[in-house]
Amino acid sequence: MEARPDLLPGARPLPYHRIHRGGRPGVWRPIVGVLSLGLAFLVVIPVIVQVPFAIGLALAGRDVVDGIDRLLDLDDPTPLGLAYLNVVLALAIPAVWLITRTLHGLRPGWVASVRPRLRWGWFVACFGLSVVAMIATLIVSAVVPSQGEGTEISGHLNDFTSTTRDFLLVVLFLTPLQAAGEEYAFRGYLSQAFGGIFGRAWAGVLFPALLFALAHGAQSAPVFFDRFAFGLVAGLLVVLTGGLEAGIAMHVLNNWLAFGLALAYGDMASTLNPTGDSWWSIPVTLTQSLVYLALVVLVARRTGLRTRTEGPVGVGELVAQRGRV
Image 1 (cartoon, rainbow, N blue to C red):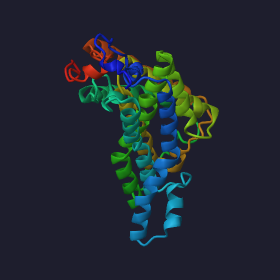
Image 2: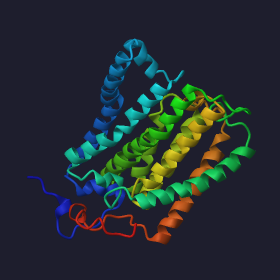
Image 3: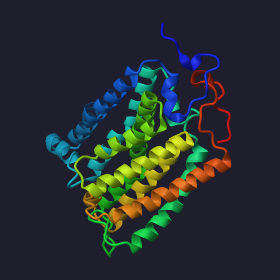
Image 4: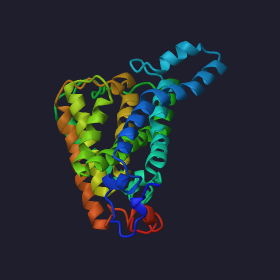
């Protein structure tokens, strides 16, 4: 029987990025976990999610093959296609929970934070801080030159149609789950996996940020750097706050704003497929990310936010409900 270091008396509290070291031993576990998560993302989950969508299309009397093709067409997106994409990404959450429980023998709540659960009070505080950072971003965005296709908005308000309504409902209810799914995968499991393998915070930040940028497919250099920078800041937030709440809050607000502006003044296709050929998008992104990072770290320190597990991971579950935040 394998020893459980998380249950050994005297084990030290762990920072977020080393929580896997409190689970079942074996450096092969995070490696298998990363590969399993990639397989789930690229193959298993997309195929599984197509089944209920195909059934719905058939019940609606629509051509199933053509309907599935439209779901996957991001160059000419539909509300149903955006819903499909959001559901696929949101299902990263149960996939991460399953891998964490079965492969590492850890309670899934340890992916959320060092408590182990989502700290909802802290999440609400972070969402408010993200609004402040977004205001600073909008000010900078208004004074810098053109930032490339996908970031520009027209000077007139789009007509509100039934398609606009359907897109709005998808964005309002499913986009937060999509953003949370990406955070659970990249800043959650991958941060703990690489942090556990190397035992260093930089590995839990750098490698997931790189994979996050690469996962968006073919893109221009400015767009890649923009996403890589976002991943770095979100990874730093996880390490410095001990949980996913700050990254999820920033991600949700970013997506709500981007899709909201697309529906009001632009178009959804260019927002989902930004060219971003201009490097002027970088000062805008860095303004938001760095202002938000500074605000979150300041408030976290002022409130005494816990950034390590309270005692050993296994035993710590008995007392993890206590704490300031």
